[in-house]
Amino acid sequence: MKKQITAVLMIILMATGCSIQPKPIDYGQVGCHYCSMTIVDKQHAAQLITKKGKVFNFDAIECMMNQLKDGDITTMALFMVNDFDEPGTLVDGTKATFLISENIPSPMGAFLSAFSDEQVAQNSLEANGGELLTWLELHKQFK
Image (cartoon, rainbow, N blue to C red; front, side, top):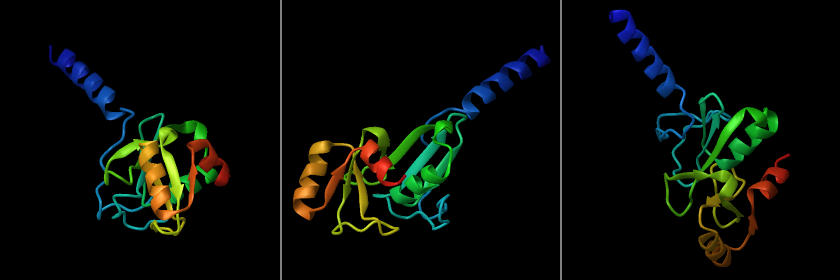
């Protein structure tokens, strides 16, 4: 009976230990995987999750994009970015609208912000100037 309980517990631990989902970023405590800077900015942070469930945190979207340029994108399952309009909220980067505006600084100087709502991004563009990009356009810029 003990062996059966142990086996069931191991299966449960294995199933939950490798889940492919975003993890909360421990702001002020964890460093960027790309540049090692401590992550404090809740409007510009980003996160990659591999197909095996491993999480990589970034202090800026540009650090995540540089990591993708240098690494194997086919091993990634999720590309998460903080929503500029909802600080600390990770959203699917492949569906986000990105704004490059020199009036909105980002931690590593690329002036890159992400928005989950395209209209909010458009409003921010009108207020701050710059250029809107889709995920594919942004990915091409960092190749």
